[in-house]
Length: 245
Length: 245
DNA sequence: TCGACCAAAAATGAATGCAAATTTTTGGTC
DNA sequence: GACCAAAAATTTGCATTCATTTTTGGTCGA
Image (cartoon, rainbow over all chains, first blue to last red):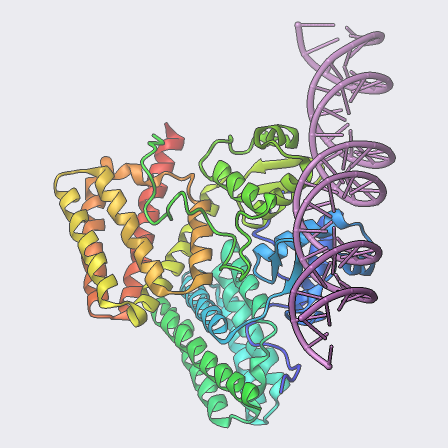
């Protein structure tokens, strides 16, 4: 379990969960705080910290070579993003996802993808569609030869393209936030054993592409939500199995 | 213009945009930072600061009677919530919404309400539905006697109940965040002059209630998205008119 | 042996101090 | 009087310091 196999619909790890739709001036890397925030977020999202464990500030200060002030600022932001919990006078700990929370987060992801699909149908260019179509065929090829890694890479790329095509900065930022929160749930790995789900997912993607080709927004919206729902169920099953093991 | 008439689908002002789904320990009011964050957020959301204007830290420190450290932490969080912009070495300013951003935010609100409606259909209790039905009738009564204030109050309550009924903490938090960001756009006021929109909105609400009664999730989802789209158009029209004036 | 109790150590929350950057003011020139 | 350059004053970013709370380690007593 817990194969590090990547995550469907996650954003590019490098691009990292931009704080929010671009503030005009750029809050990115020009200040220490900005750079630190991105680093620390990656550090947490990538799973370098045990979930639920205490994370002394001193340690992180040494790790990043800075003083506590900017570090604490970054921690507050990460807490507001839902990545860590800050308990008063008791420090920060990586947020641990219970089954209920995971279900809730998945549903929001589904809602966001549904929205992205609808907006994408309104705005996507023929070229952008062609790219997605290409990725879809590549994914199908991976599926046929049981290439899990190739499949997930293409799958993730497709979902990301749909979000990009929606051309809505706040949506993209929110989507990235939730993807980061779910990053720890490496729920993708179970397609390996659950062949039925894999086939089902593939069929759903056929529907997705078809609806997108026809620019059928509401329909695509509905398909995407159900697609995520089904993925959620598969992930929950695995989770349960893992807990049982 | 800019009648302070409240906002449809905004959360209760007092409850204020909780940072995120409740961290177990509660990040709320026990620490100075937590209390300050809530205060400052309200301060910004309520429009006590001119949008786009500089907001010296010193001033806010005096205003809230604290030192710069916790204030700066709160500012970073507010920036991550999209309420203010932080320009490196140039301080904070209240985020100004251009027409494009407003459109984007409205669409996300629509997507979130669509999701809430779908989930609500799955989870809502008969009692909670009855409450919404009651609010609906009260709203209709207000509509008949052209009571704008009563109409908006009921309207807002209905949308809030739907989100609550979805029973999804991250969704509620995200919804509250976007509602706060749009708080400044007092787009509701124009029903006063746009009677057609008012009637249309009322008809849409009939559909909303009907779909909810039948627990028709996907259908309600679609109606809610279109409802928000239409509201967006009305708001945009007003915005344009205001700019023209 | 186990638990309660207490003191020392460490960690967090907030305030203050200092260097770098920006904005404002001032002085001069055309 | 408008325009531009340089210096003073503010303001921001970060480090350091202080106060309070929590945690830890050890001792005593049942």
